[in-house]
Image (cartoon, rainbow, N blue to C red; front, top):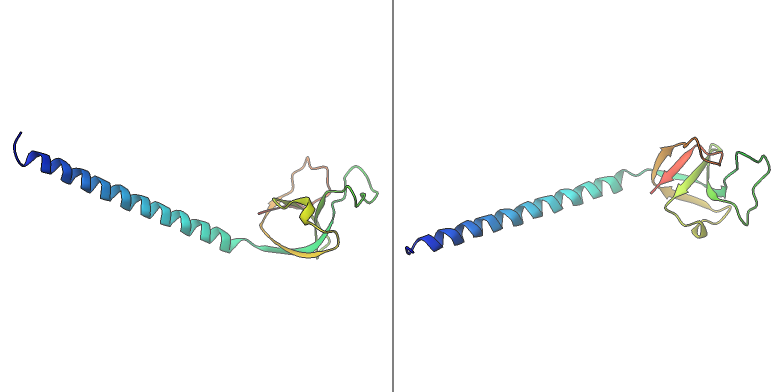
Length: 117
């Protein structure tokens, strides 16, 4: 073995290690920026917590057992995803941040869409 050969191998490994670390830092930074952008662009939807009306029944749902959602200022009902039902209090005025997904046709409720957080 010659004197300079083992030094070249260590130098190569050091450079490779630095490149891997810098790549990881850049990727983490890009991921963090993307998360911050998504958090900043979520719209706020205001309304009142209400029982979602059923398609199958014209009668008002039972407040003790109904699926809660949001009734907006225009009188449209929206389902709320990712918020526990126990945290929604009927009649309470709320603002929920989230994206509005279009109506799912097979929903049992008369809703205009779903708020996804």
